[in-house]
Length: 415
Ligand SMILES: *[C@@H]1O[C@H](CO)[C@@H](O)[C@H](O)[C@H]1NC(C)=O
Ligand SMILES: *[C@@H]1O[C@H](CO)[C@@H](O)[C@H](O)[C@H]1NC(C)=O
Ligand SMILES: *[C@@H]1O[C@H](CO)[C@@H](O)[C@H](O)[C@H]1NC(C)=O
Ligand SMILES: *[C@@H]1O[C@H](CO)[C@@H](O)[C@H](O)[C@H]1NC(C)=O
Ligand SMILES: *[C@@H]1O[C@H](CO)[C@@H](O)[C@H](O)[C@H]1NC(C)=O
Image (cartoon, rainbow, N blue to C red; front, top):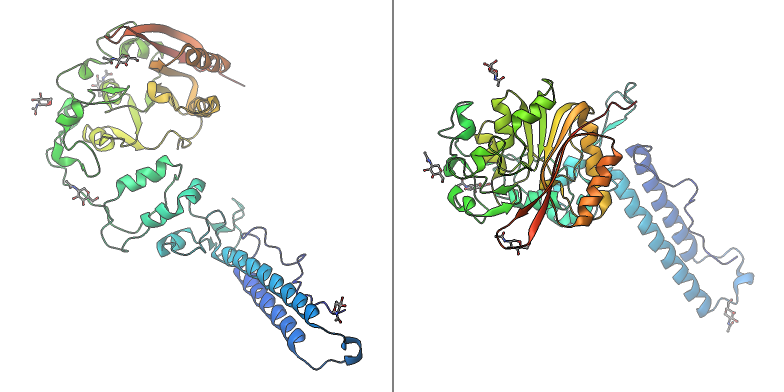
């Protein structure tokens, strides 16, 4: 007696998954919460009391108690309403109801029910757009990325996009704007294109430290790309053909290990694409995974007439299981962080490699003996056949030798 209940029936008004409730039900619930609250407020504030005798002792403290109770109930109803708004927008992992969310982002992520209801083959009831769940951590950047003029030119923001990808926001949402295109003049025909200089003018240098290929050549971009943009002078055009040491395997030797069945391959962190270029000469098609970190790798590789895949190594490889005859990786395989991170990557490589396929570990830099042991243990866990295994030191010119591991491993048939 005397207490005002604004309960909205927790038992029935739960919304676990947007997919379970249609928007119509949500609207109905929204309405019911509002009306329940209004009735309760009315009941409390309306003065005519049916039993005035029992309430004659009403005093200030009682009233203030009840007011604070009402405020608490209103507060919790508001929270429920916010939750319902999220449900109505149909997207739970990213809070689209917060302020300053670009409208394009809401539109892209809005779930669409299938017009004919549940699809019997797949069991899905609505179309859901893909966006990385880690985008939630960078919603402000994501919203900035989705802030553009529809049908207009896209902003010059590829580095913003790459920043998002490197924060795990992958895949990015699609956009409805026109990406700037650069005229690709002077492309060579295949296979001449494989080893021809690429003109500075056909790449976009915005957001990069270097503004031409000459500048890139003078830089050590990463361990797998030292002077790798110089296709004419230097060592790049001799890689895989002329060894510098016992860690350098020759392409012909490795292909011979695959006994003719090497037709498609995948190169991780493949620098400027020279591995794929050499393989192309052997009629083997290789896809090179690369981001544009400090250099226009993707455009350079494409200009050579080979296939760049713009993908971070944190993303599951977009290939079906058991496909590739060959996977090639160098020091780029060292993703850092906890040991499980490398394990996840190795399992994904194992997944896309076919039984009998080759994993070529090419001059993997072992920063410490521990690292070498950990990688060795991990590789042995997969039960690959060691066709080649070389641990070598390289003096780097100033005393301290560096340890590199090169190996060719064959995936076993597992049942
Ligand atoms: C006011 O109401 C409260 C709660 O019912 C009661 O404990 C208190 O004694 C009342 N005070 C007076 C002055 O009537
Ligand atoms: C690079 O692309 C941006 C848009 O993404 C554009 O504004 C800029 O002019 C381009 N640079 C060149 C050299 O084409
Ligand atoms: C190709 O690039 C290399 C290295 O920058 C340079 O020495 C050479 O002259 C260039 N060749 C042509 C044809 O542009
Ligand atoms: C690659 O294929 C072409 C066309 O079929 C053929 O002429 C050439 O000999 C092949 N090269 C190698 C290395 O197998
Ligand atoms: C050789 O390695 C040492 C230690 O790793 C490093 O400090 C030095 O810069 C390297 N020298 C060259 C020429 O790369």
